[in-house]
Image 1 (cartoon, rainbow, N blue to C red):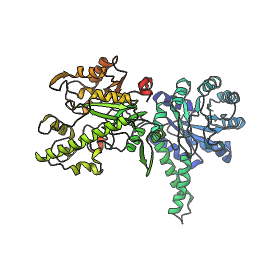
Image 2: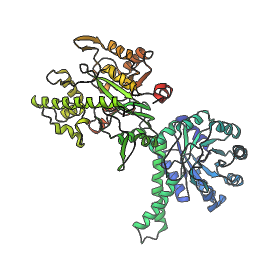
Image 3: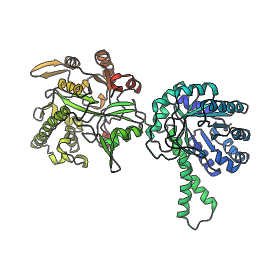
Image 4: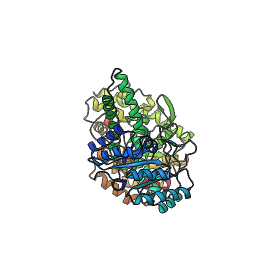
Length: 593
């Protein structure tokens, strides 16, 4: 039988870590549209009806056409009464044939909410009808239930435990910061609260106020356990706007069936896209939810800071670090022509951004890079170091273009400054841009070959003066930050400093002795110039074995550059390397950032 209550639908979603869309229909046309969309995707669906809509038709009359739609569907369909604050009317709908109901006592005292919800649960059992309960106040209007901004209150875990234990509801909607209707202010979702509640809840959790959330917000909440997501406003907008569009495009058309067909198609498409999204059919899963090594157009990346944040959010990332090479992190980014706070913009998308710098160190040793996070980037010491590095970079990179041109590989400084059609100041140039140009001009096959050519051939090995690694460690600590050694196995196994040979292991030991806070273990070595015999997984395990008891952070990152915009080879994705969010939250230094 395709007409079911919500239990089997939501139990499967919770078990398999996806979400089921619950769509507020307004009539026969929208109900058919929603069910047909679910059938095309082979996914279960919950058809929701508001009390106001039911009263407009009459409970018995509405169920006379709604139930056959569900019973004849090719997928599981539950018909759910949404946000009923009236005990007797809730029972009326149960009597009329609804397979699931929500009693909303969230505006009552905890004890009264529990008593009323419990009464509905006991009544519904005889009909095998499932019951959803709610705790806390969700801002906005959901039909006749109105909570004004400022009156919203997040659910308290201790109250939730009592409510769940005493009512025995089949689904639970805690208030966590979402809003009914279209958002008018800042979206401020308490993910940790939702995670805490979901972990102790004996039943699936429900997300109300879905319209307006970003992809990343949905992904994160579904990852945390949201098994049912309510969508109401988007359906109303699709219904009303499509009707308006049809009449504007066909002013002389008076055939109601043609109007209904057009409206149905538009609503069906909206439902189709939501179901496809909630079921995670097309989702790209990051390997890790925390990536502490990402680049933007401020150095040699191909995403702007805003694009990086948007992309990370759409992937469902929890934390990223912007770590451009030797460049101060952006405290503001441009959004629709307005400069906004970087971290506030990311937070509104469900993402935490850590500002950082990846310092290139050691003039005589390649690939000694230190990721510095959490500093006061306005500190005079940071600014002085930044100025010194900029002067050195401009001089050496310009010299490299001159050397390459002299040797038969012409690259002008103007081409570097305007690489990719993005005008740059000389201080924003990164060496990789030169390697990219070498590949694009056909001098080498790819950027990494260009890097190796300039690194291994003395004729092209133009060195710039870089700070000592131990000095950057001290700088990080002096300015309130932490310091992590990036991609340690890109450093040669034997290095030469001032005509003295030193093993990589001894060099790293000297950094640990100088106060190094962390070392990058999970990294995309297979997509770099690394030419050793170990796999990236083997390197990760070796680093953990060698340094877990020597540093406070075993870090990870993808070294993301949005290379897919330039090439299809060795493309790194956000979260391809990184950390679990559990590790991030358990690490004292990282959580202190």
